Image (cartoon, one colour):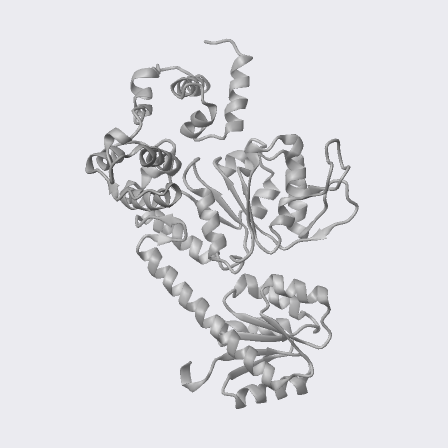
Length: 457
């Protein structure tokens, strides 16, 4: 550390004599110290002092140690935090640990134990700093967590993820289907202090409306017909970790209202229960809709949108960063080799050139599916054109040869023709057609029901 000091420690204690005594003790051990009389005082001194460790009393006037911890997890997540108290309860210990406190140091202080805890905290701080540096170097090389790409579009995404990951802020991830929204969410989780905890992903478009609330909030035995046992909801399963609500625009409006309450209160009530449960969950949401349009159309509550949209990350379609194609192919092949026990070294240049001239309507998901088919059937160490499905690329012909548009055709009719042509091309495979169109399966079903009730033009 600079100036021969071991590290900077901010001591937050409302008792003046204890505050001074602890500062003198740490100073004698070689630490650079600053003191504060309560949480609010500590927050004013954080920017200029930039402590490596905060040691805080739990119960103080104006702002408690627990409130200070919550603020620092948002504003300075890399700062180590230790609770100093003689009055902590088990519940408080559990809550502080969930929020990221490293340990409790009980009063009266045992100097030997405190010295060990300080050394351990500094080691963790140095490790975290080295991890940040390593992640930055990987990002500069086009890798961050599960994401790949050295293009400006992907570097902008990675930089934003790197900035937001250490906090507990809600993030709304937007982009077409198949662009890697869940990969972005997992990367945020894996780069956050919650990484050792659970990551739970829920696709709102894939859950029947009648089961949505049970899936998210849980239910008690007997809460409704068929509820034969208690079921924990996604919030409880993700407690202390991260919850991704994918395709949030497909969630029914009544459920959105209940979700908003949970986000505001951090408390959830299972269906059929009279009691609320405290949860500590970082919520990420994703949608393939344009959020402002979804709000305008009544598909997404405006208050929920603003609550989730603390930070928005837009995943670019593959056609907008094709310069990343070769690196993406290499990364996907490495993963598929592990999955299928293969040793495919790469792809033939002819295949790469074909890939570069394709529009990829299904984005990175379509690229992975295309490569996986090739890996499974490839009899060589290199993926060649014969290993790629014969159907590949035909989607590019639909607009030119299969779908004829004329001036004066309404947007609704053009959309109808595109959906029906795509469905026909996909041999009536609705899941594949939805991926190609960049819409959710639920949206495709709704469109088809609408067309069934309308006369063809």
